[in-house]
Amino acid sequence: MIPRHRPWEEAAEFTIGLKPIAPACWLEGGEADPAARKDPLFAASRALVWAEAPGSRAGQAEVLALIDDALGPAPARGDLPPLYAAARRVPDDLCLLETRDGQWRLTALSLCAGSFFTAEAAIGKSLAELHGPVTGFAERFLARVQRIFDGLRPGLVLERRNWTVLNSAALHTPASAPIRAGIGGIDPERAGRLLNLRVERQTVRRLPATGAALFTIRVWLAPLESLAGDPARLAAFARAWRSADPDLRAYKRFDLYDGLVEGFLRKAET
Ligand code: HEM
Image (cartoon, rainbow, N blue to C red; front, side):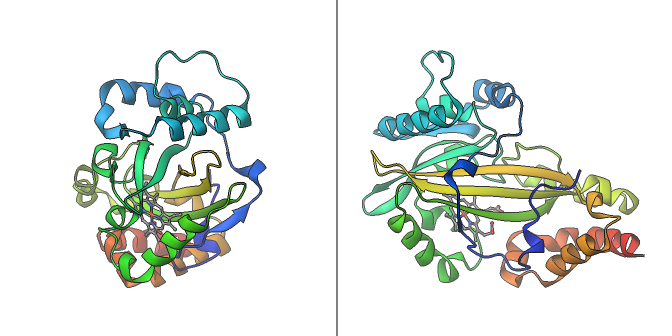
């Protein structure tokens, strides 16, 4: 199965790349029972996948109402926090941001497919703090991203995609160390099967009643070898892999995968 989104075919660069989409296309769906995946994590690893700040329940309730509106009414959900009740209806992770002390900050999040970050580490952080580890973000992107949040009008839904390559087929990847520790043991012959394209489809929109913003993250995974057999598709990926911006290449640790990816490309290109 090739990944549903292939952002490297549109731009070899990692950019802000936010585009308006029709509100009817906001939720992609495509997972039969997200609660079956999320509930065990919520029960067993709560701090990794869920956090809320005091004063966020009104914004959370507005998200739940929006999702119930989009999907139709849901069965009773006990006393779950409203944002988590909403998150278990959709494949996406849901992040609520509100202005606190003049900064957009995460005030609640359900994060069951986090890419090397956790709910407990992210809660309360500003856009600047969240992106602190991303090389070059403060200089190149931060001011624009803050302006985008400030200027969001209700009814406007913006979408962006990003991607990476990871030696994991799991959606729940809170920590990088155990995953990266396995790279050295990968048989180059099996790289196409063991390395996964990891694409995040993200949306952001303003909530009209509370003025909060909702950021959604949906992760799509597909083995690298799904690109083989289609020369144009393979060439677009190879171009993006090889020409990725050095800052983001370094941040995403493409260097750790270079030998395996290049070996896969050489074999697939012949
Ligand atoms: C619409 C607003 C946002 C924009 C335009 C944006 C943009 C970016 C960009 C350009 C990167 C660098 C690499 C890439 O392309 O992924 C990045 C990384 C990241 N962003 Fe954002 N961001 C936004 C909102 C958020 C929010 C609200 C969160 C918190 C939940 C967040 C968390 C992260 C994390 C954790 C990374 C590192 C991802 C990784 O390890 O690959 N971002 N963001």
